[in-house]
Length: 210
Image (tube, rainbow, N blue to C red; front, side, top):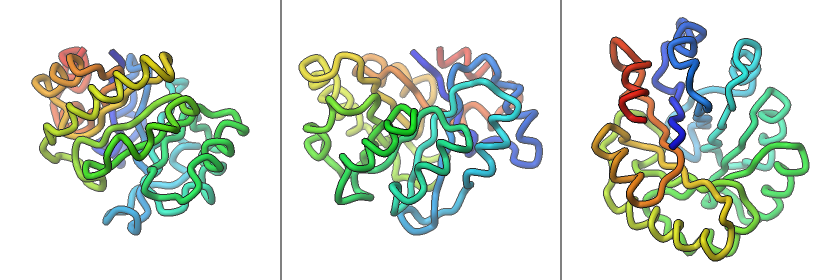
């Protein structure tokens, strides 16, 4: 199980210190929001570039934006290792997948809570990861939506037939209880923001999830 701390809940006044607290994590999860696809605005490539300067952790960038094809390359140039975009945000997901892969990054698809797995089933052989949103995307600190567990189980069944190397990532409302449920359902990567960073000891919280 990979624990990916989400910097959305980190201290942006001292981001380097926040990252230092979770330096043992393999991945850092970076949420990019445009205020259009989701009702919030977060960060751009300049923050990725800043992170890349002082960490060699895998930067797992989640594009919650309306035009992923337009901006994906900028995030790769800034230092993102993995780019995930939303199936709901494009009419030509294969073109976006190819663009990301051609520029050297791993590629993932994400589904909102009300989007069925069937929307991405045919694309599973083409990607490296699927991000299941277990909350409505846009804001941290929301409660885990239990219908996400059925999606994880379905994805686990599909990857055994179509892409054994596919990683199943879950983002939203992750804590000790929901982490266990996600693992049992078949998840490989858990994204946790407020649970890790909104504590006096982020490292201890991360280890507890492991």
